[in-house]
Amino acid sequence: MSPCPTCRARWPCGTPWARGIEARSRALVSENENAELLYREAMDQLGRCRGVVALGRAHLIYGEWLRRQDRREDARDQLRTAHQILLSAGAEAFAERARRELAATGETVRKRSEDADAHDLTPQEAHIARLARDGRSNAEIGAELFLSVRTVEWHLRKVFGKLGISSRRALREALPGPRLTGRR
Image 1: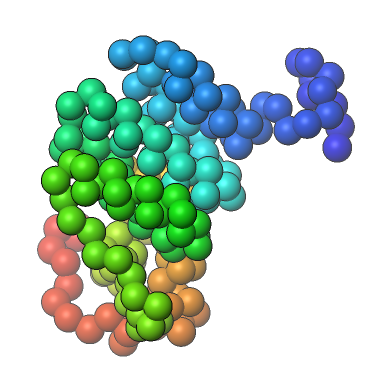
Image 2: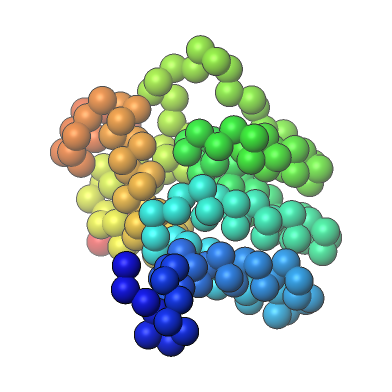
């Protein structure tokens, strides 16, 4: 690994992962609007790298902060996303923490049973899969759902694995049902 051109350190400073972790860390010790901007920066940066658990944790921490600010609706959106990402990534302790936080906002989230069907898609995965089935590109899906293209790709890989398929074309057969409207 070559040293960072700015500080000459031999660790991954300057990468999206490092910038995301730094922004998340700064958000934890910041207040009000500054904290919110830093949480959003963290999620943006972490959405550009392979650190899916780090992205899920950023959504979780941001959701917890929003709940403490009495912004329950905003918190629920972040906490749902965190729960889905962390559960899909196998980070069960963090997913459980997100579930408890969601419950604190007044929303109930079902626990996954040990014998859950392998084809049981999360709501986020099902939504992304339907959009992909209907011909939307990853960039279009990401723009509509406020996700990075890499996060959309990650969700689609999970969908393909759960459904036992390897292409978007196979989504048409694996996900029968009405097509979503709104496609140009």
